[in-house]
Length: 176
Image (cartoon, rainbow, N blue to C red; front, side, top):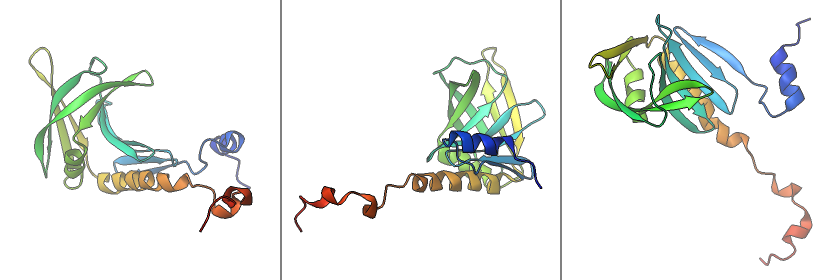
């Protein structure tokens, strides 16, 4: 007999957290899916991370690195992969006590993650130097696709009650 997992107990107790939470490996990437929040990410040797986070249907790419930034401030970042090299905008955002840099435009970052083995980001520092972070893309395509698919499914999880559950008195004033 398998032991009961603590998350399952918590899900059953609270009923607010979807019980289908799972963590999957896709080579150098990890996918965390639970229905309402879904994430695919990787980390590098300097403990920085890069990934896509979805809350409901809304998804964004982020960098999480040891750089200090001012929440709400937008910065420029250079991105380079096998398929694309471009300048992006990133906005410093405080989430759960940690600073994340939200990358924009989404489509450019998505395109850069779909082929090749590495992606790099160069962020200009106040000193005039650049902070460079490189991340593996091995396993990125299926990991990101899974997170985006789960995000797209989230809108169907909030279903409206079927018509047969609506009290008949609701329809008495409707003329057909």
